[in-house]
Length: 299
Image (cartoon, helix red, strand yellow):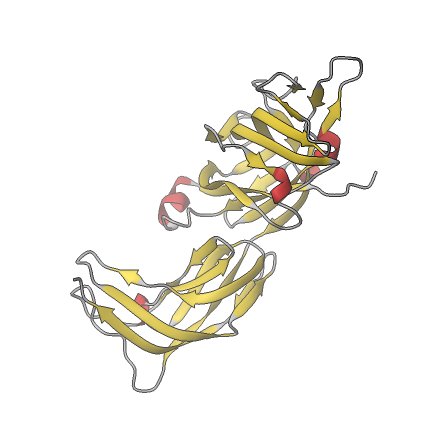
């Protein structure tokens, strides 16, 4: 059966908490997890879901026990606003133990659909029935090959939420619709990175800022794809790296850096090339040339 549109959940398992650095995760033997949601549809005008729990089911990571990734409310997510490769983050950078996992599981707490002729069915008004949504075990999504090994590095797992097969009208005269979520893992990728060198234009230097002398290690390269921003680290020699980057196309830039005393280091420059494509398990190369750098003192 050909699916017209699919909701896809790119599942990012990073080898470190990107916002907090590498050392804490490395020492705890963990990896971090980010889950993204993108669209699928059938013959519906709207399809909304609210997810209240997400967890991994382990085989060797923690003796087969579940590892909770999220518990709360994602809010109502409109699946049909996420066509093609568009995504929305469900969770970001959640640390999990290294190990082998067999399943990803979701608990859907609420759902709402609107048909093409304008009729509304929801779990709130009782017109949309979902027998499997709130079961304690959650909706089961088997991982590729029966299990996935998570250890170091960053990995992306794509999960399809097939809207066209998940909703249907109930037979008989009840007038209700029934939701039987259909989800399956369809791919597995390893994250890559971006690396290169940072050099100063002739006659330019990095000024003192924040009450301290600064060098090239104060420069913070960034890679941006939509709302996703990954920051890198530059050594005093000018070598830099941006790690745990999910496969995709990224624009390159330079971040403004703030210091405790209120000063801000503002760096201007160009990247060559200006954007890069990061492949699965690959490191893209780009170099930065700094054309100006100023320290804006605290006001």
